[in-house]
Image (cartoon, rainbow, N blue to C red; front, side, top):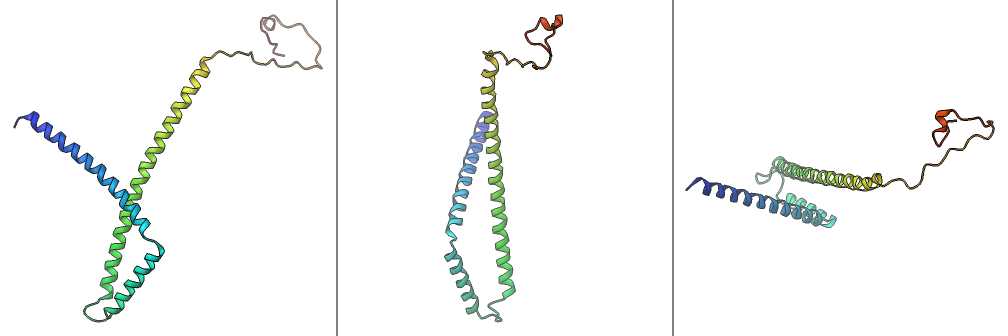
Length: 153
């Protein structure tokens, strides 16, 4: 096999991996939504009652049931689920931050586009003249003031 054929195979494999990652993220998102929607209060109570019934039927204190082991296993599974949920929440938060950053960039671009034509357009009306105080007597303006439309007094 020549070098170009190997490069094509590697490129194809990378594309397949990329597609699989996208599909996995989509499926994980769907699973998490269904999982959260599935745990209604009635189901939580039912599972708790069933677990309590099974624990009582296994006759605590016999060789078949060791409470400490069961509690340790339940704690481990609980920690595993909590860490998976935290990782998923972290992934969603980073995606939300990226989306917010992109939205902010678009807003900045739009504001720049709106400001550009407004700055390029000449002002149609001159700025309003400041009224002179009525109490001061009229004096002849200085030569520099006479050259301008507005007096500095």
